[in-house]
Length: 302
Image (tube, one colour):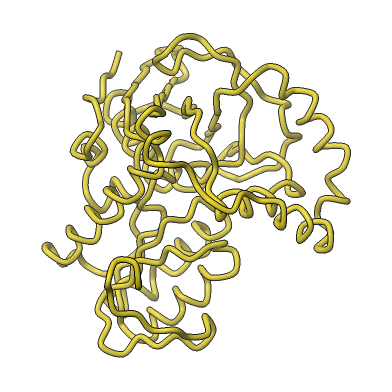
């Protein structure tokens, strides 16, 4: 705030000062600690709530507050950053292209360096295993147990399934009961994923998590590195008849998209005053939201 010469206020997350606030864009992670108390505070105060989380548990909690949000006429829209604007828009577009799809795979190819907050959130998830959706339910699977060779848009890459936020949100957007999310990585990562599965009980220990968080990077990617690392986002929908539709879009680096995407969603809420309730990004702003952001290509469906 000081660097940008903006006003600020400091408060305990469990006793937030929301006086004179009409809308909150929550950027303080890890959202496992800040999401629930801030959502609850906004519902009590009648303040619209948006955030940039990618955590499945936060999406589930926010979705569970839909009826409260409707009653209070409060917009609850988590995930208005890179998690999950691009993939959510791909999911919504594929649902339109193949309305009877019963399986949805999403994913992305990025070489961007993690920020301190993202690194710490990743540490928290290590002991929880992989997450996919089967028959409408979120289930836990061993990390790396599902993988594919995928052309995200920059050549075929090996990609394991990861516990990405769309396992929750893409279901709310599309109603498709079977969902997986993949990320391009090096095949050499297989050994590390196997080790994570073996050590899962230990990785849940708070002492070990604090040690690993202490080793997280102190700074995020530089503007120059962000400029060099666009993201290729991909999705595939399939129905019972075996019909397959594939969608791709290229976006700016995830951190840049988080800035432009979250502010676009804030501006949309302030300008359009949508009715209270829970929203995914595409439900809030339309499936073409990602293509309106700087650095994005057209979203192409095949």
